[in-house]
Structure formats: C-alpha cells, structure tokens
Length: 115
Image 1: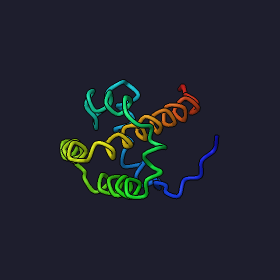
Image 2 (image 1 turned 60 degrees about the vertical axis):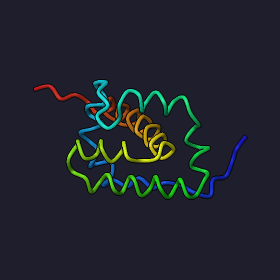
Image 3 (image 1 turned 180 degrees about the vertical axis):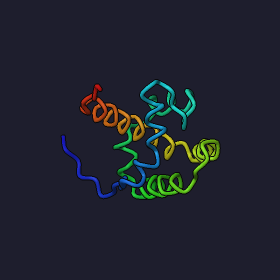
Image 4 (image 1 turned 90 degrees about the vertical axis):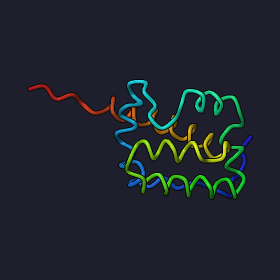
C-alpha cells in the first residue's frame, strides 16, 4: 500500500556534514546524540512515516534538524535532543539510524588505498 505524504523533512548536505563525527562514532556502536533508553523507546513506538504524515510534527523535526546544526557542542546537542517532545525525538532516532546505515554503506564503497 502506497501513501502519499504531504509533509517531508529536508536533510541538506550541510546537516549531513555537520553530523559526520557523530556518524563515524555510530559506525563503532557509540550513538552520541541519544541515550539507550531514547533509542529503545523510539523503536517501540510509532513508525516515523506515520508521525511525519502530521505536518506539525514534520515542521518540528525540520526545525530540530536546523537547530542541531547551530549547536556545535556535543553536550548541548544531547541536552537539546532531551528537551524535544517524544514524537520529534523518535523521528530523529529513526532518521539517525537510517542515515547511519547509508553512511556505513557509502564508507564500504570507498576503496582502501594501500601505499
């Protein structure tokens, strides 16, 4: 069944670049932005597609992503994420793991250079 979503979240190259270190840590199993409890709760609740179909939540997620770029300190990013409402935070967790998977696949495709 295909649903058409009226809302979406734009993840710009600037957002991805600013989170590169976080993704690099994620490849080693350390998820710097989220506590284990946040991750567990996000995967036990609604799917992000269901949540993103709500335009208000979609707008909140977009604003959260934009705000995360402006925060340079990891501790402040963690505090910011903790302050978000659970639905927005859940979507960020799902987005993070989706992008982490893509990041890991892209890293695997880069040939290793031996000298």
